[in-house]
Length: 344
Ligand SMILES: [Zn+2]
Image 1 (tube, rainbow, N blue to C red):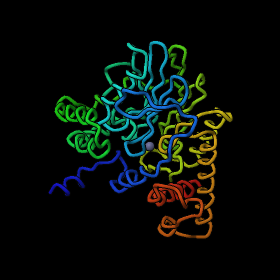
Image 2 (spheres, rainbow, N blue to C red):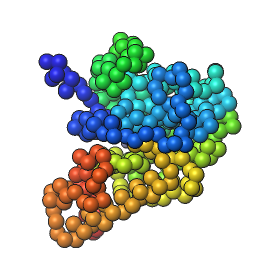
Image 3 (cartoon, rainbow, N blue to C red):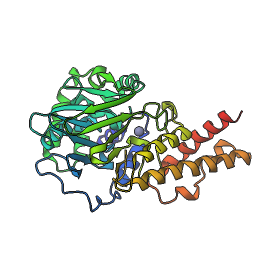
Image 4 (cartoon, helix red, strand yellow):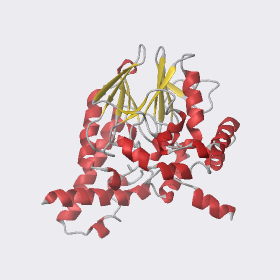
C-alpha cells in the first residue's frame, strides 16, 4: 500500500507525466559540479546556494525543480522561481538570509509550470510578486495539481532533500495548513510589464517576454550589473527540452527568444538555465542549434512522407547523450504539428 501510495502520489509538475518527473530525479545524480568560477555556498542556508556573481545566488538542483535565483540589492531581494510547495518556506528563509537583513522579498516566475511556481505560496501576499499576463490564469488553473502536492510534502522532503531536518520540519507545517490554501495562494499579484525594470537598490532586474517559445508566457530575467541572465526553461542545459503542447509551445518562437537572450550575452555572461548546470553564452547557442536541428529533422520526415506516429519514435543523432531522453517523442510531436500546420 505504501508503495502504491508513493507511486500514485509521487506527483510531478503540472502537465508533466509521472514518468517524466521520475526521469528528472534519475538525471539529478548526473548534474555536473558547479563551474570553477562559482563561489562557495553561504553557510546557514537550508538549501545549497552558490554566489555566481556578487549578490546573485542560485540554487541549482535538477532533483527539486527549476533553478532558483536570489538577487540581493540594498533594501530588496528578488527571487526568480520557487520550485515545489514543500520548498516554499525554505526558499523564502534562504532568500532572506543571503540578503541584507530586513530586505523586502520580491518574486517573479519565469513561466507557469508547476516546478517553477509550486513554492509561490511562500511569497504571494507577502511582497511584490509577478508573472507574465498569460501565466496568471494558467497558475490559477493549476490549483488542483498544487493541492495534490500538499499532503505529499513530507514525503517529497524526505525523498528530495534527504537528511535535511529543517526542510522536513517546514514540509510538516505545510501539510498541516492545507485548509488555508486557495487558488489565490499561488497567484502572483500582478502581470509583469512589457519591459519590466525592477530597481533592487544597486542591482537591477530587467524582465522581458520575447513571444511564445517554451510556453506562451516565458520571461527572461537579466541582471546587467552582474552580467547574468536567468533564461527560465528556454534553456535546458544538456537535456532534451520539455515541449508542452497545451502551453503554446513553438520551436520557431523558441529560437527567436533564444536569439534575444544571445544578444544579452558577451563572453563573460553567466547563464542560469531553467534546468541543468549554470553555464555561459555557449549553452544558449547549443539550445539554438538543438532547435534548428530539430526543426530541420522533422521537416525532413514530413517531406519524406513519414507519419507523425513513425517520426515521434526516432532518435536523431543530435539528441543522443542528452538527459530527459524520454522528452524526445513529445518534442518531435509538437514540432511535427507546428510544421504541418504552417505548411499550408
Ligand atoms: Zn517549463
